[in-house]
Image 1 (cartoon, helix red, strand yellow):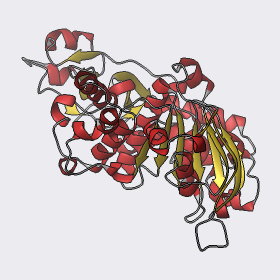
Image 2 (cartoon, helix red, strand yellow):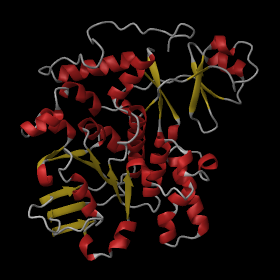
Image 3 (spheres, one colour):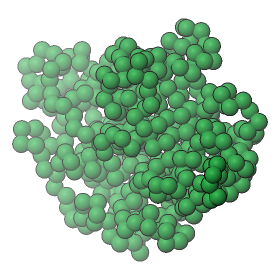
Image 4 (tube, helix red, strand yellow):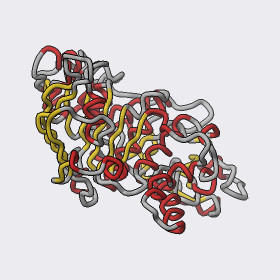
Length: 409
């Protein structure tokens, strides 16, 4: 997480986790699945376990909430010995999110989210308020989604509900086992951005398992690159691992795109976000047109961007409800510069709309801003190969290609 993110984030609500010489050997096996792991996971940070299949990263994570019992070693969570606590109570105090949400198919969305609060015997009004709050937090309209069943949701929506359920009892620790691995790449990027937005507000301690090093760079405050038996090959910040892989195995994870990965180290919030005129659907089209020089953004009742328009679209319009064109691919303030670049290039426009917490409009990031940021990064890393893989030649003038039937954005 960048300094800018830390300075604007809320107070830390997570707690420190310490693994002290932790091992796991399954009955009947001589070789341990996890061998002598020691590490400290700082409070309020996202630590990503990345490694090949069979490296024991999921086993290591599951020993934290004792879904798998360690054979030897000690685990402390917030200074308390996790192995001395009642296992069920321990799990109720730790959020857990897995692929496809792991939702109970016979329960509604609201009932799924309420599982742990009910076990903790919260009263009904408190549970209802918490479900409503969390659905709003993960970008799902409570009135629209609370009574649906998992089969009525898309993969991305199921995953959002899974995260909401993991957060239901406001746990200090959240374990996430390849939670976004089963969704399409576009949805995956959006879910990653939303997790970063949530973390900026909550500052939980999050342990995240993935096999995707790019995802680890994007999400992690720190990355633990694990080898066989979860041996820690390198445990450091993404910047340090990209710049100085500890050995050839770590360098293999980093891959040939290390220069491009640098784009995943900066967030949209770290660059200039420009403003554009906005209006809600109930506002006057004439008044909105008077404020527009080039184009503007139409918002819904919750300040979320839904369409964009120019003066030509507004000419003679009686209402803003059906005016304008749908927005293309959006990014969030937590999105990386790589995400923003891909969004702009995919739409072949000069900018893309940025949203903030809970999907609210935050502004616009332009191709010129990204080029300036890429040039600055290039100047800082003069010895690195040129960032040509990003799809831009930063020494050239970029001429955005406008849609035939719409103004350039």
